[in-house]
Image (cartoon, rainbow over all chains, first blue to last red; front, side):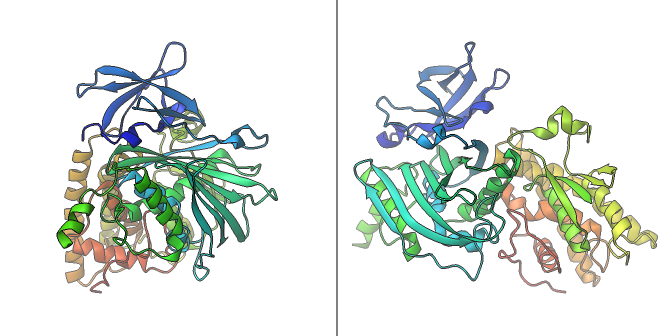
Amino acid sequence: MAKTTDAFALNEWLVIGRLEDVTHDKPRITRLLGQDIRAERTADGTIGVWETDPSGHKGRALPVQERYGHVFVTLGETPRDLLEMPEFEEEGRRLVTIGYVRVKTSPLRVVENFLDLGHFPYVHTNYLGAEPQTEVANYKAEIREDVDEVWATDCSFFQQKAAKSATDGQQSEYEYRVTSPFITVLYKTCPIKPGAWDLVGLFVQPLDEDLCEAHSFVLPFDEENTDVELRHFQQTIFLQDRPILENQLPALLPLTPGMEMPARADATSMTYRRWLKKKNITFGVQKDAADNSNRAA
Amino acid sequence: MIKLYDYPASGNCYKIRLFLNILGVAYETVPVDFYPGMEHRKADFKAINPLGQLPVLDDDGFVIRDAQAILAYLATKYDAAGTWFDRDDPVTLGKTMMWLAFADQITATSSAARLHDVLGFDLDVDAARKGAHAAFRILDDHLIEQEFAGECWLAGDRASIADIACFPYVALAPDGGVDLGNYHGIRRWLGRIKRMPDFVEMPGIFLEFDEPMAAE
């Protein structure tokens, strides 16, 4: 597809890889919102990103931010601010980047799936949940107008192995924060440090409307596990989700109410969809919904 | 204790975990950062396996590489009944070796397509998918012939290490955009393996996505 015309998506800061994925030896050649791009490590050690034409020639240079272990780029002229995560400054935390998993579906579906507590016992059996403890307790989902973010709070769920450092099951408390259609952060009870939250972040790189790469990181208090063990735990979770996501139809996210049955556990998803609708986002959204409703009427 | 140099998302590592579980042999894993760290290509790991490939097994100081070789070693050492790797009957042995070797054909095609689709590896995915379909056609024909002969497994009427060797990258083929819908013999065989006692899952291989009951 060609570069999107979705003004909201164009003016987001979007992930294109980990800092280590762009080296002097190896550029990262990829795509963003339908636009081919190329990221290179320049002579001064910083990362440059350019739009490229079909034969790979560099065109316009794009604004770049190197933050949170990742490279962020925007295709727009007036980007919204990238999220702030003050936890990155806290002593004792460790950043572990996970890499990405490519998924053939709308990037919005990947974010929505990340917000869904209800699938834990079925898809992440013995990792993030297990039958018969499938109940999702009531929680609160809201759009916070002051910060223009979606939040879900008071989420609570029994988990066998809530994080790599958990040895027994525990009642995990969760908070979800959605700061962009393509970025969400999970705050989760830290199993070893009372009162603290561990962070699990998801940066979805939208390549095309129905193709994305889900980059992620963890920022826990954890002295017990190696980076590799933390990576493998998160990769396992993402690879369990991937076939489920690719089987969701339609691939593009429907934003017309009533197209998919909302369950109580889907309150965050519904709030996320409501927020997307308010933003008039069209990238990754099912297009013919309005036409269908006209035809039906 | 047995040490398995392991990557959770690798089908070749998984077949060793699956077989160790079936045999009831305790082991520990040494997690290797295959992705994104590419640790298997670095000097420390190449000192263990100069080919830079997973899995590698270390059984009390004896270090062995190659998934199929590891299956044969484990069956010989730990399967007291000798059913998983029957070396007494030349025909059964020949068939087992033939389908063990076939597992590499499946890895070279189906696993490559999956690495492209899941981790964005730069390779010719169309060629990989085409190769996977060619291999699956051969496998499917064989399994259907086996069923007609009253035998449900690759090398005879009992499951062998050849079945374990071929299973993962057949089951994971949809991850690489290789649809299994038309391979009815394969789908019944996948179901038989998933219903074995002591079967374990890996990410991407679920019990829930059950294949139709086999014509056993």
